[in-house]
Image (cartoon, rainbow, N blue to C red; front, side, top):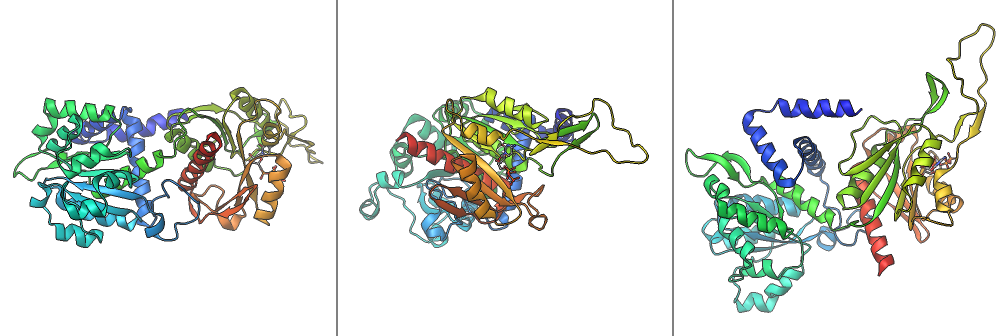
Length: 475
Ligand code: CTP
């Protein structure tokens, strides 16, 4: 499986042309990732974009209620978009559209230089509200004020971020509305640099960028391509609006932080040997469990994934322990304790052969062999009922073909866990092995039915819920 992973990644990188390889190397270096990991991130972003083009919205940022957002105006993230003065500002008009399509509530700020490239009228018409321009404009200061603009946002996006704006941010300037808001905010900031390639490689820009990265500012782009200046090409084009949207989504998700938390996740099926060549198994692909492990790691958690045999790449940033049988899975999970959270997404075989044969069972004439089964340990129930080192949050899954919620409620009690994520695995649901999932989150306080969505999305929502629950318990 590892070999497969490496082959796929190296093939992809090797087949790129030199320009793309350079770009990839730079992106990878900037994100502190290997080129292969960067390829994976890019592919994942592309997949997320495809998902979103199908009409998905941002996951609710701060208070995910786990229901489909009822109305963008009520539930979308609040984003302040600062438009800097560069030719790429025209793309910010499209960015406004793209963000709004996904439910974002926007407030726009235009720098003085930006007004040479796009008009207040265009930005106002597209965003649906008057853009802010002046630090000392009595109207806007009475309306919101720059401190409120800075604080009443979930995220601040600077696109295009010119070399000058980067320098001001790095130096902590606050001599106009945009820089004052950027200095006054305690919210995540994402910049989409856009400038001439020479300005991008200038030492001063590199210094400013390093300072901003150290300050925790997120960066998307720039890309390689033709410049506005005729005949010039290089690294410096602003990232495309959809790339910026993907980065926005990444930053909003990071809001649900699991930093400092240790999480064990089980995933995939187990294989219970009958003889050296045959085993009892099930149709679990491990996609949901792996997606949860990846999302928990992306949210800053220390994640150990105990996985049965699956045909999936290891999620980035996750420690993977590979097992075959239920008993090995149980042992591996116990070794990870103590953890803050335990998530049991594996489809553990309930039974194993009582006496697996050491040699291949031969077909004999005149009779079929009888397989005597015995029960496997229930890993979830054992961990949930532990008197010592019980994780603070124990989450089980319930794979059901009938009466999904009723059975899930019963499982919550029987297994002694805190939450059950229940799903309908009847063949017509297509969930086993498929890419999307329809789940019900069953807790002591009730049942939430989530809309059908990609398994990745379910994973991120669940991680946000976990972060919120741990956060609430700590307060
Ligand atoms: N589970 C486990 N160990 C087992 C069996 C199940 O840890 N030996 C966990 C699964 O990972 C899942 C939950 O228990 O989180 C429920 O699994 P499921 O297969 O739906 O339920 P079972 O307990 O096997 O009950 P049944 O098959 O009768 O529905």
